[in-house]
Length: 265
Image 1 (cartoon, rainbow, N blue to C red):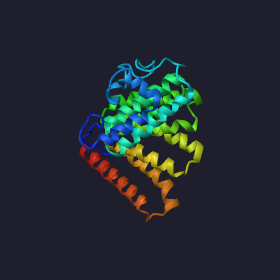
Image 2 (image 1 turned 180 degrees about the vertical axis):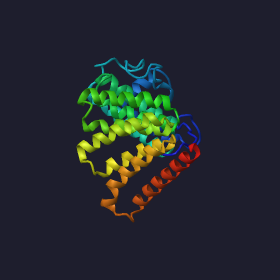
Image 3 (image 1 turned 90 degrees about the vertical axis):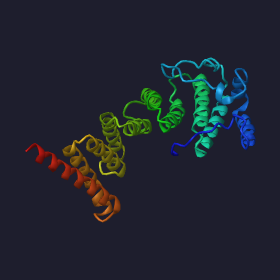
Image 4 (image 1 turned 135 degrees about the vertical axis):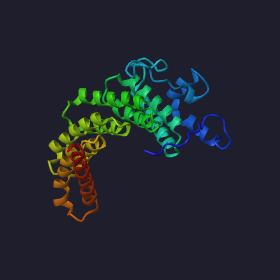
């Protein structure tokens, strides 16, 4: 994701944005454009806000469930593509509006529990996380995980994406216990799918170690850094930069642990 930069709407009539404003209207497609025109002149202003209780029910500005032909899901794809272009321009407010519109269309067409919603929820959650709206992102990531779990089961490989998104949010939010718990679960899924010595398992366990270190739990951090090294060192060799980095992290945790024990003694 891009870093947070001041976001300027490309729909506010500023000089230099007229061409993009016109192309954005075209990109919405007939269904989304109809939704917009029914409510106001600005696509950004007309897109529905997220309800205080989170996403789940029909959007107040979307057609009722079943009212959208499946072919009109193309409008959601165009809105998603538009949101991705805004992300490339660091226009986070506009990206959020586009992703909200895409989610409203998909949810109205497929219902609130269809697993295809997960991608739209994750895209919108990513923008909210980037804007440091962590609570808003959490609602979306949790629901994305829930719809995938309900559709495929709690052990299905398809939960890895939503799990990683939610764990990463908690890491960014410095909710270390929540992050560690989800990363442990994610490591377990990777281990079942890919084997105990897989790179993804190692990198996920490193996040667990980092979470413990951030809270001053240096004994636990040292233990998990050791598990990471046990996977990476035989594969990459002890001189590899990544192995050296983890070795340094483990050494730091060990030094901090010794200092803590010395202070208590």
